[in-house]
Image (cartoon, rainbow, N blue to C red):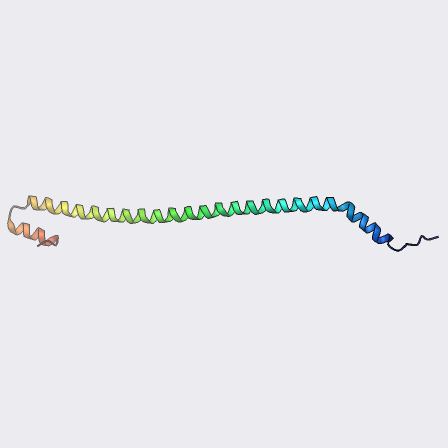
Length: 110
């Protein structure tokens, strides 16, 4: 003869199973929360590293631009010095006033 369920038998079995599973579920939930917190910390650390690398890259780029501008200024200054040196050498070699006048005119000095 088939066994008849009494009222509450299925519910009682379900509740017993859940009560037995609850500590395991709580452990899994806590472990999941710890893993989430660990992952968030790791993501934040990686974000900070990436942010630092980006700032470092920007700083190096700005320094490279400054160095390039300084190099251009140095080259221009060297050209000016070379022109002045050449003018002074020519003036030292010039013996006549018309020669000196030509040299001054050539370099824009009057």
